Length: 85
Image (cartoon, rainbow, N blue to C red; front, side, top):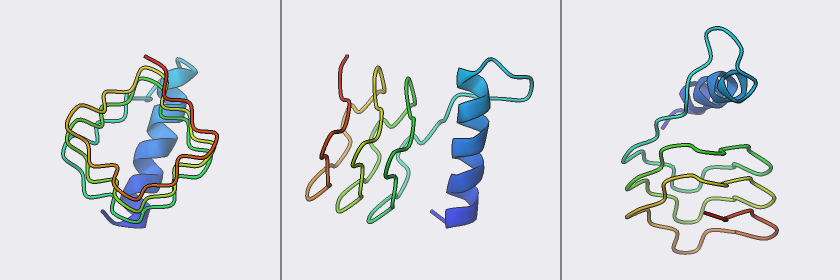
C-alpha cells in the first residue's frame, strides 16, 4: 500500500477515535502492509482482517480491539505493542 494512502487512512482513523466529523474507522481488510512502519500508530478497533503485516514495525502501536483475524504477522516487530482483545 502506498504510504500516502496509508497516512490518510491513519489520519481519518485518528479523527474517528476522537469522534470528529469526517473520521472513519480504518479498514485495512486484506491490505498489503509488508514492511510498513506503523511505529506508535493508534489502530484501536481497526479492521486488519487478513492484512499482510509481515516485517512491519508495530512497535508501541495500539491494536486494542483491532480485528487481526487471519493477519500475517510473521517477522513483525511487536515491542510494547498493545494487542488486548
